[in-house]
Length: 209
Ligand SMILES: C[S@@+](CC[C@H](N)C(=O)[O-])C[C@H]1O[C@@H](n2cnc3c(N)ncnc32)[C@H](O)[C@@H]1O
Image (cartoon, rainbow, N blue to C red):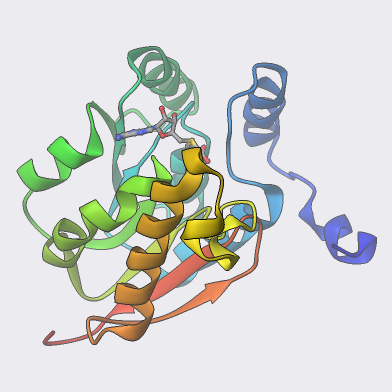
């Protein structure tokens, strides 16, 4: 990225800057700055009442979205109990305990058990899992609702035929391609794949599909 463009990506929120520094020091993956900027802007634009997130980590992206849309309520699913504990503590410290709920569990188990309508769903959990979550995403997302998914390029590995991917990444790449093809080529969503960060999918659930 050109340094002029990246000069606009500095964290101007002290709390989020602290979380990013912690993540860096402790090797916790959180949204890259350009993806964070995009997610924040999309959330502010959409002004969702309810957001569902897969993959809380330390709560960075959930807090970012809560700050971008002051009336939104967020459910965020995290499989790792230690991460879920840190996320809950950070969310309480940020003053969002009443607006963000961390659900401990595997998104593949939690999503099917949820009901109601969400205006926005953000996928940032296991990358090979997105395609398995898609039926529930379609069920839970309101018509006109926004789907955002991070790491869809998967370090560039998604560009190549899955058969030529290293063995350990083959299934993830094949699953990611199935996910992208259903969202971008099917009739359920209007969407686009941006090369922001590690690849951000942005898609709107079509009305009546
Ligand atoms: C990239 S990190 C999430 C970063 C976070 N969204 C942010 O930007 O602040 C991915 C997280 O997903 C969690 N995770 C992985 N597989 C999961 C699953 N099946 N269900 C729920 N969470 C999962 C990991 O433990 C990890 O904390």
